[in-house]
Length: 544
Image (cartoon, rainbow, N blue to C red; front, side):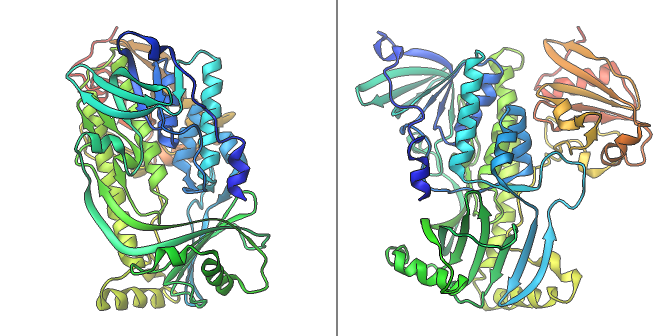
C-alpha cells in the first residue's frame, strides 16, 4: 500500500534534543516556521538559500501519509526549479495537459491547458504530496550541506505564542518537556486547522459548501490515457459527479460526490467504496484500495495574512475547494511572494512595511482563487432547481456548440495570479502583450541554450529586449542583474511574441519572484531606480 511505501522515509527529522533546550533563557532566532508540510518546507528552503537563518518546528517527525494534494501546476514547478528540486518532481510526476468533460455517458468537450510550445515545464504534473514534500526536504539537505542555515526539529509542538512589538515568544513542547524560544518573525504554515491561528484568536471569513466528496486512491494497471476526466451525473451512478486522475506508481485518484447527508463512517467502509469503484470501472477490473478520505468544500481566508511579526501562508491563511488544484499551488505562490520580501527585510535592505505588500498581494490572490473555486463548486453542486437546469443546459449545448464550452466549470485550474493595480507595481509603458504586463508572472520562452526563467534566476533583473542594459548595478544595497537579448535573433521568436508583441523594443524590471515590476520602451536610470524603490517598499533610492 502507498502508506507502506513511505513508512521507511516517514521519520525524516526524528526528535533530537537541541542546544536551545539547555539554555538558561529563550534562544532567539531570526525566523521560525511553524509546520513542516510542503509550504513550511518551501519557506525554509527559500529563506535558507538567501542565507537567512530559519528554524522549522513540527509536531511530527516527517512526511504525512496519504496522497492528499496531487496536482502541481506549471507555476509551482517554475518555483521549485529556482529552489533546485523542480527536475526531480518533473521526473517522478505524471505529466498532463488535456482534460475531458462528460455528462452522463457522453463526452461534452476536451481542453488543453498548454497548447503552445516553448515552455520548460508542462501545464501540470500529478505527484502525490508525500513525494512533493520529500523532494523539498531532500533539497533542504543539499542546501544545508552547502552551508544554508536551515534547521528542522521534529516533535517540537508550539503550545503558546506571545507576539510583542519586536519579537514573538514561543513555548515549545517536546518528549523531554517544554522550553522557550523567541523569533524576530514567526511564519504560520501549520495547515487548515492552524493551531497558531487559534492561539492568536484569528478566524476565517468565507463559506462552507454543503456537500461531501469521497476520495479513493487505488493501484491498478489500466490503459486509460493520462488525462483529467470529469463526469457530471455519471452513467455509472457512483455519485452526482466523479473525477479521475493518474498518479505515479500505477496509482489512480478517483473522487465521488456523495452528498451532504452521507454517513461518513459507512461511506469509508471498504466494501462500500468498492461498490462505487466497481460500478465505475467494471466488476472485472482488478485494483488495490490504497487510501481513502472524505472532504467538504470550504472557501475561506483570513482578513489579512500579516499580524505584526506573525505571518500566515498556505492553508493556514486560506482554503479553497480541491477542484482546480488551487490549494498547494496557491500556497507555493505565497512562499514565492513572501520569501524575497522577508529576506530583504531580515538583511536590512528593505523596510518592514514591505511585508504588508505580502498580505496585500496574496489576499488579492486568495480572493481570485476563492472566486474561481466558488464558481466551480456552485456549477458542480447546484443548490437550486434553476441553477441545476442552467448547469445541464450548458452541458447539453457544449456537446454541439463551442460558444457554450467556456461556461462549463468542472474546476477552473490553477494559474499564477497577476497583481493588477497593486502598490508595488511601477510604470507599464509598453503597449505589448497582456500576459507579460506589470504585476504578472513572467511567461517562459526559449533562449539560447535553455529557457528565459532559468536565466532570470532569483534576483532583481533588468531585461533589455533590443537595447543594452547595465550588466550589474547596486542600487541602495539591492543588486540588479542585467540581461540584454538581441530580438533579431530568429531563435527568440516566441520571446518576442510574449514580451514585445508589435513593440520594437522594451526594458523589463523583474522581481525575484519573477513577477514584472515595471516595463518601458526605453532605458532610463531614474526610471529603474524609482521602480525598484517602489518594488522594495522604499520611498526613494539613489544610484550607487
